[in-house]
Every structure is written in C-alpha cells, then in structure tokens.
Amino acid sequence: MTVKNNYLLKAHEIFFQRTVELNHEVKALSEKLAYEELIKHETVKLAKRVYTATLETIPQNPNDPDYYLKGDLKKYRRYKRGLDRYRLFFAFSTTPRIILYLYLNDRTTLRKEGDKHDPYEMFRGFVRQGRVSHDPLDPRIQKWVRTYSPEEQPRP
Image (cartoon, rainbow, N blue to C red; front, side):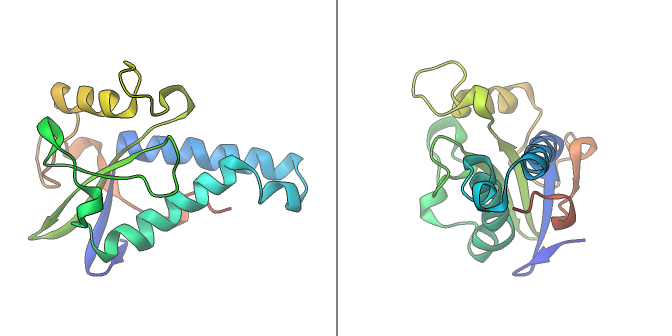
C-alpha cells in the first residue's frame, strides 16, 4: 500500500495501463541507448515527471488551484506542469484521504484544443461512459481500481 502525505494512492486501470506502457517504452529505450542519450530522451523525461507528480507533487496538495478544472469536469483535477501536451487527471477525497489517478494521455491523444482526441475530450468520454468517477470509493468503478505502487511505475 502506498501512502504519501497521509493520502492512500490508488490508480484506475486506465491510468495504470498507461504507466505500464510508459515503463515498457523506457525499458526498451534503456536497452538501445547510451545512458547520456537515455536521460535526455523525451519519453524518459515524461516518465520522470509523471513519477514525481504522482508520488511527490500532487500528494502535497491535491486541491491546489492550479489543478482545478471547469464545467462538467469541475469535480476532477488535472496536472500539467512540465508535461507539455500531456495531461494527468485525478480525483481525491479528504475523508477518507485517497488520491485516485484516473488518466494519462499518450502520443495519439496529445493536447490540441478542439480535437476529438484531445486528452480533455478523451477523459470527458470516460466520465460520460461511467468508467471513471470523482469519488475514489464509488462502487461502480472499484473493479478498475488498484493500489498505486511505485514499484510498478516508470523510473528513468
């Protein structure tokens, strides 16, 4: 069980699978690139930023105003600092103290306002389908939730 700043960290299957893919990409790169090239590679930098965001930055204050969303997504949060066209979506609860990481886009869904594959549109689709919830304890999504383990996350 991973606990940071008294928050239990959980990952939705959508988010978890994306981080597993990212981990595989980093591993494949590490097998073919020299260390100096590896640490400069954009995929490795992304993996490090996601790792730091999920295990250090977000748990410090998941209700940071920089994370707020508006409109139909206002019950959710997103992290974007240093992620360029990537977005990390999450929800949290203070009672009980849980952060639930929900979605991280990939290369096929980079941020581009108005595009149907924009990460906000993709995430909005998951919300509409009922695949994600702003309530980390929502019984409808529990089959897709697992404890977030740093051992399973990409490490550059």
